[in-house]
Image (cartoon, rainbow, N blue to C red; front, side, top):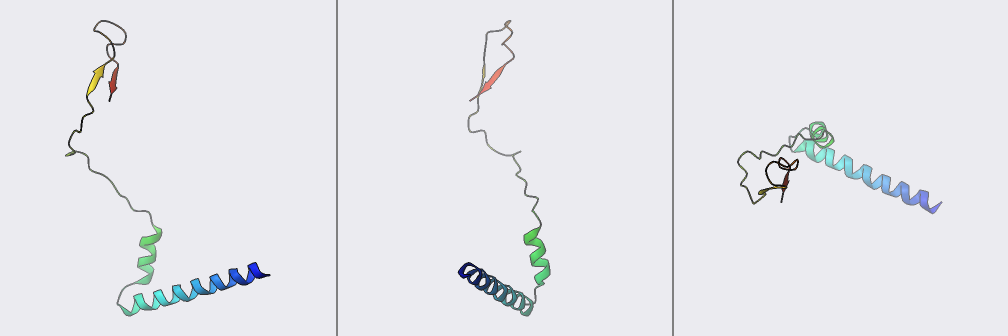
Length: 76
């Protein structure tokens, strides 16, 4: 019984907060539905590494030339 009352109280607080946010956003001239869509939709964040400096990452050859391991490289 106490769990239900606590859950109902939390739901009521969240509902009041959402309605207040919706009204405040609308009064400020913004679109609350557009804001909710931006929050719900995952962003397409990409990282451009074309101009990234090389901080090491030298390539070491695993074996001497002529061995089966000559073409294997290990990055540090």
